Length: 214
Image (tube, rainbow, N blue to C red):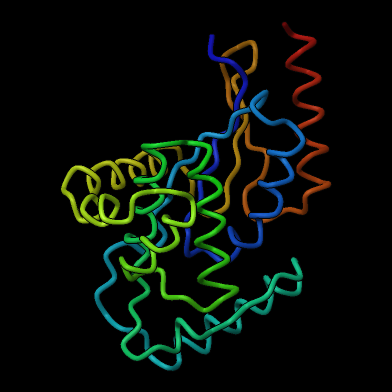
């Protein structure tokens, strides 16, 4: 039977996932490799082709205030206020999958970096050069990264993640799932944002139960 692990359904351009990024960091600090986290890209708004209207930008920024109030994280709307901004989540998701190919653990770190760049720093992470610059911060070859970003196989792999998310019945992000238990079953740790202490309490209970069952 597979060892206990977590499955994290998220998207780089999901504001509540940005809010949840410190919680993921807490989990990684608390458990390390003893509780691996498998990252699956959910596909929030892939393939968007219409630029955002001013009304849509303002509504989105209003939504961000709720995340900011719940998490205390900074928000900067410079990216969405850029002329002709397309809220296409696919480039960022592909970038994370590209990093995941090299190092699944680094992909989680890179996901958090993209979220901080977009929401906290106002960088447009739909732009390949921005995605490549951020990948280069972690020692990834910038030119190789850019060459892969538009490749057909990377697109297929990323859309495969979206399909996995849909088949799992995930309807919102972030979603964190734990498993398997002794019966091979998986259970939801949280659907949507939850504070770190609450999530860690659930995980501690689950781990204690899993250990007892073994």
